[in-house]
Amino acid sequence: MLDQAGVVLGETYPVRMVDHEQAAREARARIGALRKGEDHHAAARAIQHKHGSRKSGLKPAGAQSRARKAKPPADPRQTRFDF
Image 1 (cartoon, rainbow, N blue to C red):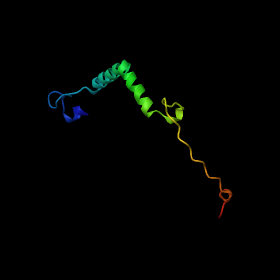
Image 2 (cartoon, one colour; image 1 turned 30 degrees about the vertical axis):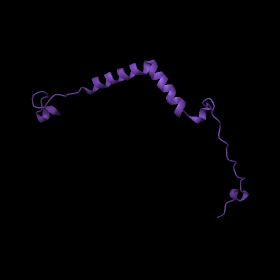
Image 3 (tube, rainbow, N blue to C red; image 1 turned 90 degrees about the horizontal axis):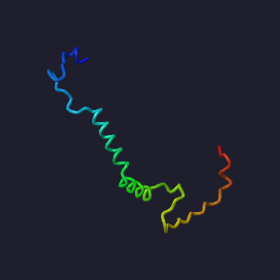
Image 4 (cartoon, rainbow, N blue to C red; image 1 turned 90 degrees about the vertical axis):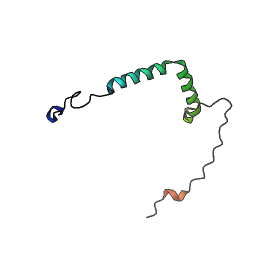
C-alpha cells in the first residue's frame, strides 16, 4: 500500500520512532521482574487483606461479623397471580 502511494520509509516518510513490539516485550519483562520480587508479594498480600472478597470466609484478626437483618415473613398472597 505504501508502494502504491510512492512512500519510502526513511526517505519520503520518517521511520518509526518507537518499535511497539519491542517496547511491549521490554514492558512485559520489566513487569515480570517486579512481580517476582518479595516487595511485590508483600504489597499484593496487603491489598488482598484490605480489599479481598468477603465471600471467602476469611476475616481479619479481631473482626466482628455484622448482625444480619431478619427477613420479613413471606406474604402468602405473593404466590398467587392476580391478572
